[in-house]
Image (tube, rainbow, N blue to C red):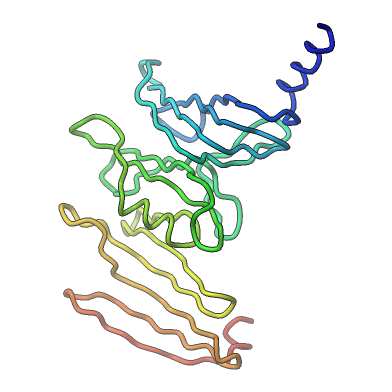
Length: 227
């Protein structure tokens, strides 16, 4: 019995044991804290089916429970997880609180595995519906967070959503979208960098103006452009 109790204590204090874990998240959101349950954690990596119970910080009452088939994240030596970090080719938190559609309400992105380009982080994007008073899955924003290099970024000053994509070492694309009321996402700007010729990189810029695309291209020496 003493041995069983000791092993149970180790499971609670470290990530050596494989099993369901629960975390409390109080930071990252002005409006909500969260009780997060994930199916499995081992050696600092948590993954599998997960539930996120959002708690209203003002009333301290349950607000909404969301679920994912593959909640995936890392925890550090203090048993903590990150929130609201989006780094291209770096750390991307399992939970991102932000106003993704620029309507003034806080939205939420939840990690749903590693299904974006090159096995990168992917997310389910939930936007707050002010009429129904709850978070609802946005299919088009979720698609952006799956078909590109991880989670997209937001530029609140210009009200743009920004994505990054690539193919191999030598082709990259940067894209900006606007969120148009009653219409949805509209691509308005992109920069394509094609260095597949080796010695030269062709930079093509496309801008949507008055519902028409304008395109321009310039070629640079690769060694000069990327120095």
